[in-house]
Image 1 (cartoon, rainbow, N blue to C red):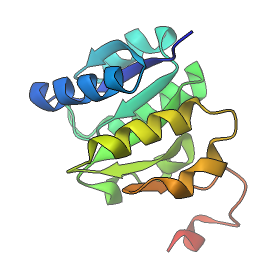
Image 2 (image 1 turned 60 degrees about the vertical axis):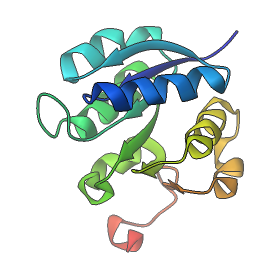
Image 3 (image 1 turned 45 degrees about the vertical axis):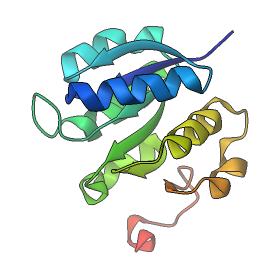
Length: 144
């Protein structure tokens, strides 16, 4: 059974590009959401979420990522041109892909998110910055 991916992106052409990458990588697109309400409404039907930070309803991406992970058990990967805006919401995600992204980086990150032990594969993905698993750092100041 293929994992379902939620694409949280308000720029339609970017969302459609990501949708094609997701399908080419062998995953199903569960939904495309342009704001918090649509993302959370689609959360239960998805396993993985690719989340932009700045959406139609403002910079809600970090909060969406936190809610998707904590309330719905979705594995989150942020896709953004502004990774510094993620802040403490990084604890809810596997990592971040910086825009502009390479299609193979997104595909590899999806395979990482679908893996049983995603931490083992993270270092192999160009353009992907993994976040450490919760509890593996002594504090946020260690993230540099």
